[in-house]
Length: 129
Ligand code: HEC
Image (tube, rainbow, N blue to C red):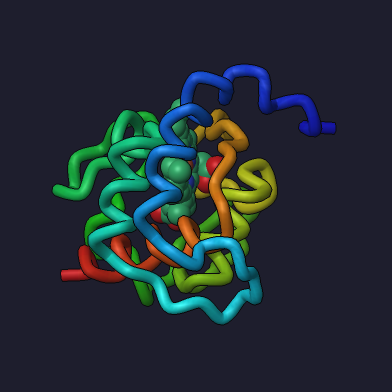
């Protein structure tokens, strides 16, 4: 269904190559990666996350990352989900699956590696208070 959402991601993908170099062994991919919040901040800034997500509590197109880690968010349909790495991973890989209540499902499928997801999770975790 949303398999062809990559179209707009080309421009963003260019900066990915650039960002991937400084994480060294970024290519081995199991899912228990330790994230690095400094690398995660770079992902946040270079992948366009910052265009839709603030870290200061202000609402943009998407919810702010401030203070969400470890909390339960309510989704469209009433389900509640805890914000952890699994949820962040799902939010990024399948943006249409868990839609936060009150928001439109407009988040694009971005080309982000598992390592970058772990890093951006650590970054979001660092904004929890
Ligand atoms: C075009 C705007 C847009 C961009 C770019 C975008 N997002 Fe989103 N994102 C949204 C919207 C809107 C939602 C809320 C609706 C939903 O859950 O799908 C959301 C939801 C989320 C959530 C769940 C938040 C919560 O409060 O539960 C996470 C985590 C997330 N995005 C991470 C990211 C990351 C990481 C990036 C960059 C790689 C990114 N987003 C880029 C629009 C965007």
